[in-house]
Amino acid sequence: MHKKLLVLIIAMTQVMVMAKGPIMTFDSKEIDLGKVNPGKKVQAIFKFTNTGDEKLIIKSVKPG
Image (cartoon, rainbow, N blue to C red; front, top):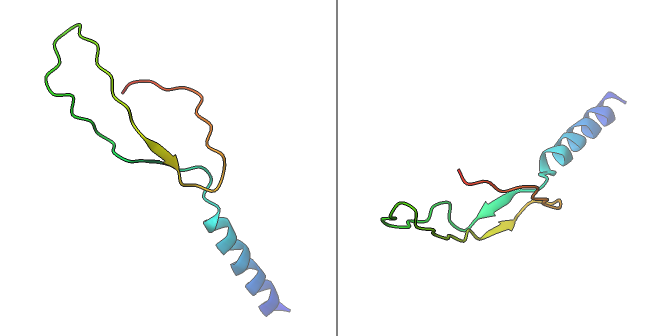
């Protein structure tokens, strides 16, 4: 009985470790814009993929 319970606990722990949730994986985390003059607007595009196992929901984006 104790061996079956131990095996069940180990199996449940492994399943919990494998459940990652959403994971945002970027192609590149940095973009070199070179020298930017004050007041000039620049644009950068960051490509990413959800490599997790759940839906990725983006609620807001702010420059860092």
